[in-house]
Length: 267
Image (cartoon, rainbow, N blue to C red; front, side, top):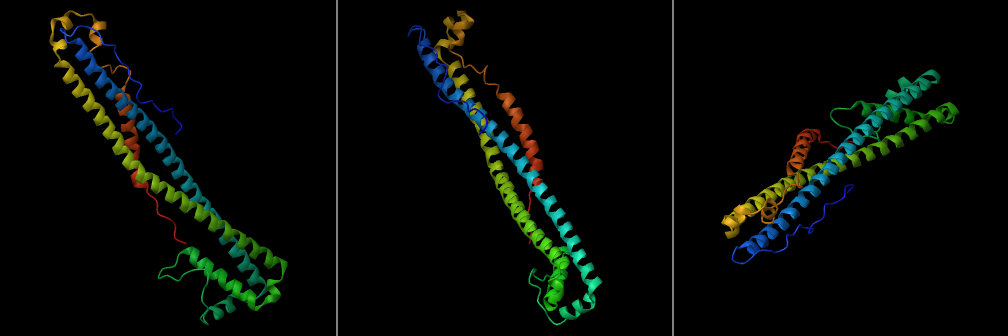
């Protein structure tokens, strides 16, 4: 976590004072008890909202990374297609490749680099074409040994490695994003529950304190504001509404994230 966690257990206790007859010691005891719970509930809210803020930031970073990697893959595949074209043009220039390539493929040669599907993707067709060219070069080693052919095939092999690496990295990012997204949903619910817990402690504490003998007595009515504060819960420093608003903003952003789930690439 990048943020500094709000501590638990550091509560603001009021020293016991007053007489048993007035009922003030009991009221202070009750106030201190609920103030402890309230301060701890507030610390949980602060820590959870900050944690979710960090999670939301990481979600955006991983999403952008996955998108960037997808663009890298597209760029690599375009470069590979260009290299296929260069190899095909070179073969056609120096041989009767186009004619013999189809003669070769009609003999039932199995394409090794792709799995045949009912509907071919452009990349599948490109790889089938490349397989045909490689098969042709194996049959005519006098061409394969030429530096011009060798240079292009080496570049294609290098590009294939780059594509495999980029796809693996992309899929890792996609898996990470989808994992974070599923955790994020659970943590949002946990954060909402912490606000509910805080409100419950506050409402219960205020009700219990309002029913104490001291709060109902003339001693309390005539007491100074400072003395009255000794038997009232202090929420001035909590600023719960600020954290509630922050959580609402994050939830609105999350509603957009849910529609941006990824699927891993097929290859």
